Length: 109
Image (cartoon, rainbow, N blue to C red; front, side, top):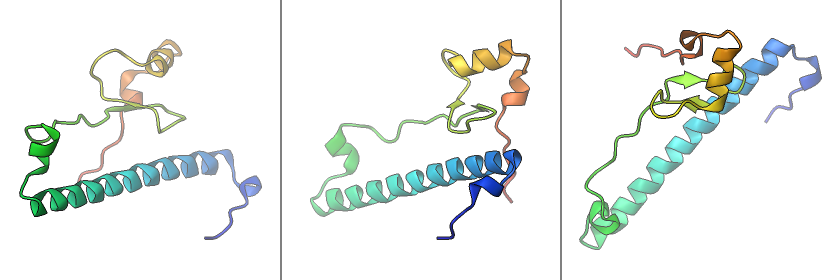
């Protein structure tokens, strides 16, 4: 892995790096969870059960995708459901709009 000299980076470059790292961590964790679930399902099938039977669930629960993201700390997100998080309220109080806090989604082809 290449060593990065953080002292030579601009503030914008550091913020972009922070966003990129947060996105890479989320992607890594999602892949690991998927792998773990697949392995658990394979073991359950080998024993003659479904994973849902063993865990007492009836299929997957729907997980809401985050809709809003903290402008400076991308690891802080909110789905837009339930109670507004403190960072969201503070951002609105400081003059930001909810639209400015939306997570940009890219269209997949």
